[in-house]
Length: 303
Image 1 (cartoon, rainbow, N blue to C red):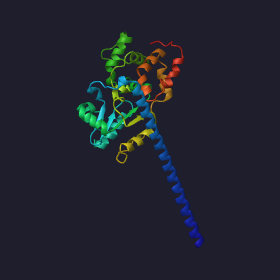
Image 2: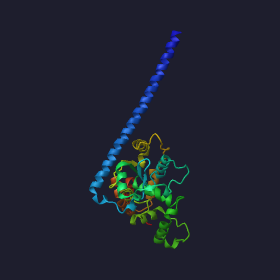
Image 3: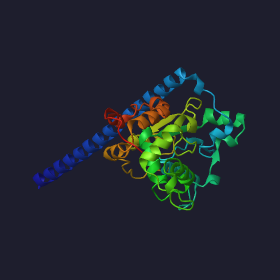
Image 4: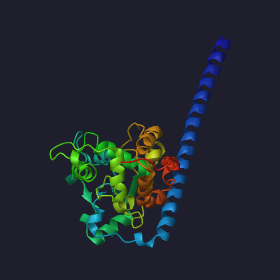
């Protein structure tokens, strides 16, 4: 009898130790991941400050209307710069949940959000000094490709109608259809944008959307590290006990990026890189990224 009791107690002790070890291991790993993410934030903000210090012309924003892509949640004291194609729908949904917005509502409705430009200068200053401010970015050329797939060949083509018509009229006038789809190839898209980036928010540079040299963001997230960044942001903003970030899906893969950009002559990729150079530099992305390899080939492509 005593032997059975002793065996039972030893079994319980073993299970308890295993549970404790498992919990300790998970907690330690979690703390390590959190610590790494926090260190990354320090690095990103230092990089941003260094860039802005060497580019003083970026220190003054244009008229207040340029702040219309920065939304303000007064109830939760949060400011968020909405960069399209960088998990914007998800972050707006989270902020909407905090405010009690109904599920299923079009989270992108303009009237749902107050914009930073809608406040007086004194009110803006007060909020920028006291609210939690964050922005999420992604590799610039990947973001541009994502915008093309979504706005030029995807379901949401309404935004690109004018641009598609202009591109076809410029490069293939014989194919222009006044009431047609006017489908644009990625090579034509790159050629058009490498000459002049329209000011639509879906492909505008980060510095023109978010003014990071004027607004001292408390958190700079990258889509590529969203899995680590999202939990830390929620914790730093003090809302991790009220909302959670949904499952994360993989974004555009490396092979797909190269497949699309290989359709464009290198000279247009080079021009595009220069137009987005500030986005690469201020957020620590390697210039042209994986697309750089395509510049080693001969400039034989024609569109």
